[in-house]
Image (cartoon, rainbow, N blue to C red):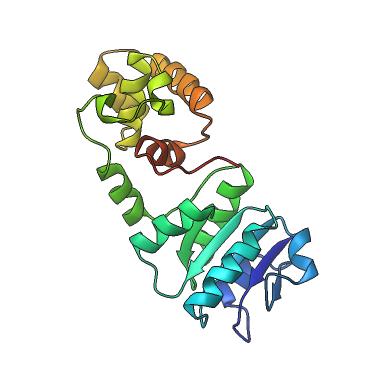
Length: 204
């Protein structure tokens, strides 16, 4: 069951259409929240202190958490992901976007908007090696080829583009990427980029 935690009097139409069996509650301590499959936390009409309290209380349920902001920004998205959210979107996100988020989270992934993803990819140095990373960083456990593939993926490259760039077969890229995901304990490209940038986002 999908649970929407919100101070709004009514459920936004797109959310209600996306999850007709979902339920809105007025706070993260309501007993129904513990039974949810995915928690959607609407930050609308919440003061800063209450946002922080509700966020922590929602995370305490140990369910995939989507933070919905009335004024989304890249900085807030980064903050929410670092604190433990699995997705970040507008409070009035469109129907298809809500459905996409739910599908990604159901498969253990993370979801962020295109703009934030582009900014995140821009944080990864284009051609620099991992020498600037601190000792013990998980990225350093990868082989040289795995590092090259991982950095290329974190920059947003497709498997085909990476294969052409490194002059290796596409299936070899997939093999290196699969190995890197296992060694780093990540599930997808978003987690990989965050980890490489030392943002300390841990998989669930």
